[in-house]
Length: 178
Image (cartoon, rainbow, N blue to C red; front, side, top):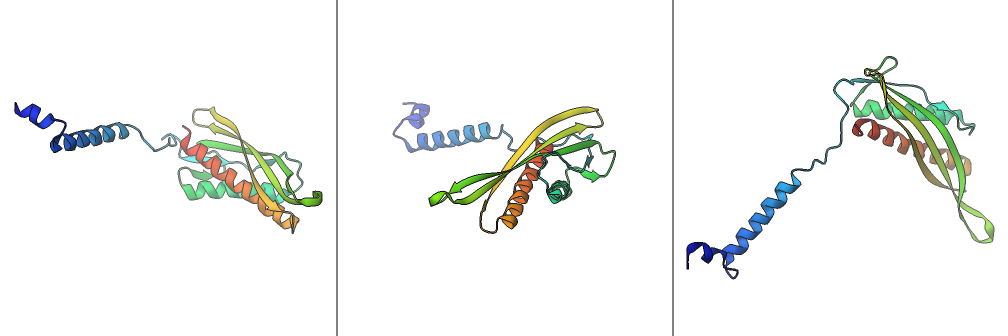
């Protein structure tokens, strides 16, 4: 019996160890080929101009338009992928508040409302001003649920929560979808 066949004999412990080491090595090699890091902003883009949100929702609460503008700005300022500037940025972001809908979500016995859902939709155009091209134009939609008790205050909180989520989605789209 030669030495090679001795080590590869199925009943031998060395074979099991070698097999497991080889399997680990192959698994590591395959996994290291994939990157978990998303895209990033191109090097030629260093600044972004974010216009004030245009409200086409017809909802009638101007504070939500202002809140949406401020929330998007805060997200970009805290992220630091692009520096925010008021005008002439390397990139331009134009958000439009298209829709705010208040919908019945759950009904209790005797047909009484229990919870409602507020749905917010924002359309955003993202332009590379250096190359003078539209990178993407997308609709971002999110919602939040609120209880009917103290509906006026809860509705406002729910709308702001949906806007917070949309602002996160917009930032993620800008910094990772290249």
